[in-house]
Length: 200
Image (cartoon, rainbow, N blue to C red; front, side, top):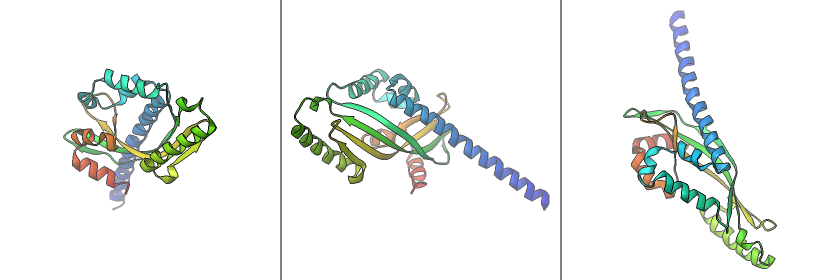
């Protein structure tokens, strides 16, 4: 009986360490991915994306889109912080391993095109944009700063981590409304419902 208890304990410890190691590995990779986003290292960001994403748009097209979005002469987008808050257990389907990553992101949008306008015009524009963003991200998640003509957006989001034998290491795909159709075509429904349910 004592031997059985010892073996059981050893197995539980081993399982726990395996479970922990994949979460640590995913977190470490996600933090690097977020660092690339913050520093606008788009090649690094694209290297972490699940390659099947490029069936819809090529790497070159996606990089051009990112450069256009982040280097607009009218608006500057910056990531203030991205913090992993949770990583789910792993789930394997047809030899591909999945996990869900939950994270908090803080992003600043500075409206360069409004800088030379009067304070009243800036205030009107900022209030208008704040209303739009609050509709999308929630009343308490958007704050404005008239001095810098910017909005700070706080959001809780999630994405999927994928370990596919065809590719090296963990890859990521964002999970939001704009990506819904693509995510649904790549991530099996059983995986989406099971992993996202873990956080509820």
